Image 1 (cartoon, rainbow, N blue to C red):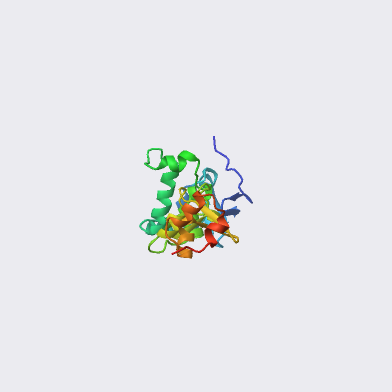
Image 2 (tube, rainbow, N blue to C red):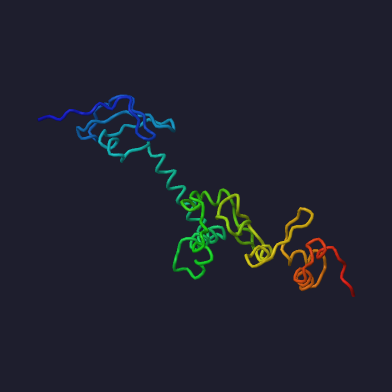
Length: 209
């Protein structure tokens, strides 16, 4: 019994809009083919079965774009940004990673957009400058565009969970940062706070020599 071709006129398949039935050609081997307009502007004749099964989604431009994106990602694998992204994901989701307990183990996650795509991470963060590393502004917050920045080693050390932060005149800095700012000895501010001094008094009282 002769099969009847399904009418695909006017239907859309991803980037392909079916215009009309294609003229018979030997290369189609008597199979029903359709003349399609691709979103990129090119026209192409496609076998109906390939449209219905999803094997044909464009004139070929989608495949080329995907290959180009994959090549671009491959070229970035050895960059500092890619290494930082991979290390952050590992800390959040690899339970066998040594420092998992301090990250994924206490609820630190990577936003879904970054977790699914290095390209999204790279678009938000760009390349990591030499001597910098990926840091979170809020150590209890996620790896996400609004909570991450490229930090120097000093900035990263100042942002560890073990640091004590003091807010004075609207500025929040670690004790170590205030120490460097005021020119005190490392132990001066900590000793004053231990004695019960207020933050203002601990930061504004001159040191006796």
